[in-house]
Image 1: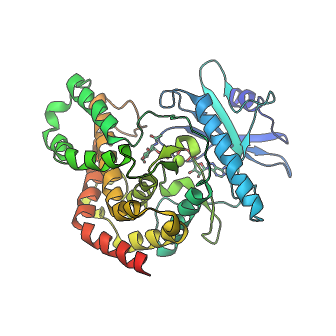
Image 2: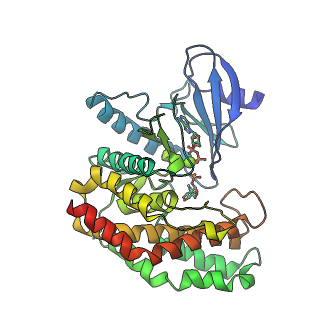
Length: 361
Ligand code: ADP
Ligand code: GN1
Ligand code: MG
């Protein structure tokens, strides 16, 4: 606590600190809420995962520029710039982060009266989430400056296969021999997934400013399920907007948990798919290319497949990337996400019909 206090004291905060407590259950960073006395704002303190984000200053530069752009948009529309966009709090010296010799830290304002959800249990919530991500992308459509690539090839399956081939060759944890079936899940779909990414490489799918981690818990809602703002901006980069759609579908439509041990719980809920897509298209429809529209349903398969690969690869590597809670956690996640992928594949034509109907409206 004293250590955290001394870190927080580097930042230009208002008010006296009462308490610093851990918050949330992200897989990557360590998040704390910093409570202050009286009317001063409360804050979020995060230890940014330097092993995963090799260039934290570049990442914070992306976040600062993107949030400045969003604030200008919200202000122009007469919205509340304190609640509808994340506010990064600099250090006393004006830096966007503090390096304590070992770790990188960053602070933003805590948005009061906000809630996050782990499960999209109502169609309304899915619709609102889709609208929130659609609006986020729409507001950033005229952001023309280049963004730093904070994690190399984040949703680039060609790069993921390079990592994958290396992981299999090295077999660091000696687990490969037990994973024949799971490895085949990946290999049997390799060409299909590469074909999708080839469209991005050829410019057939345009590059846009994207969030890249659009799971439900990365949106703050108000008490009426209206979206306040999109958070966890660490991975904001340039990519295909379809990744944000696909990753949200992976997260929202799952009838089970991402790490469900009971695979019977896991499937894709097509109703939730429909409502998320309706919300998303209400903001994005006019600005999407024909190719983007065509590949919306496939993006859900692509990102879910990528997630199966990433969890399995981390298991093969000996659990070095994702935080785990027990020994086989990454393998359990692999199986649960694979079950979701199978459910999406089984409902692929239904997803296509939903999108066609929505676009015909
Ligand atoms: P991680 O990268 O570890 O997922 P997040 O940035 O998503 O970290 O934050 C973790 C959780 O902390 C969020 O799901 C949300 O509940 C809460 N949180 C983060 N930032 C804010 C904020 N500015 N205001 C209110 N709650 C927040
Ligand atoms: C991580 O940071 P968090 O927990 O929101 C990961 C995502 C994965 C997700 C799986 C930087 O997201 O890519 O999809 O876990 N973020 C990073 O739940 O790797
Ligand atoms: Mg998060």
